[in-house]
Image (cartoon, rainbow, N blue to C red; front, side):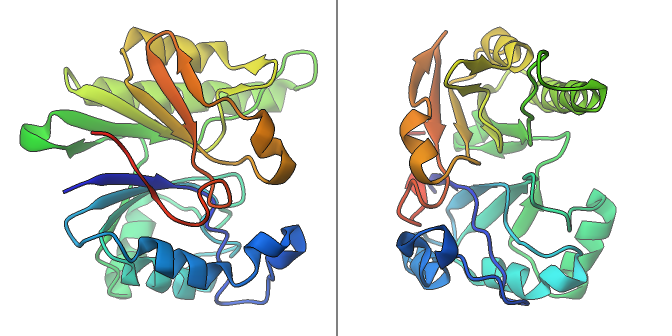
Length: 232
């Protein structure tokens, strides 16, 4: 069993949403993803860090989820800013069951064990960008809610060694989400993977260590559409 991560699949198999408008590297990216996942086994786990489908509702996302389900390994998904299809865990679980989707689990206010004897905990939430001088009351409320969700996930994991997966980066250029960084430090999080950043912005992303936590950008175009194997 091995642990992988990738974000921002941006699938649109049920509608016409060409991704090559964002660059030639996105041309036929669905086939690239299929090839990238081909090295995984059914015993492996891959965390998908948000922005999975352009669909506006669950029914419209069916083909995208059937594609994800067909990829090898168990997939743990979290919400991204473009995942408008996202619904309650109960409704998503029922949708997956009705459509024979059996290799996808939802990360939302919870955690999943990984490793021998459940040594590690896969935790996470969407996250949010909030800068006091730019953001309004609405953005602040969303950020506070995301911090609470991450804290619930980390607390549920107990004494396990914690790995965190987000959609939004908690560090980007001069921006830092102090509340999330403090949680990661408090819980001695070993690794924080995030997505959301694409194109030229990838050069500005923080990849490295801070206060004992390693940060990695895992958006699909950053990884060449191949999930990255994590060293755990």
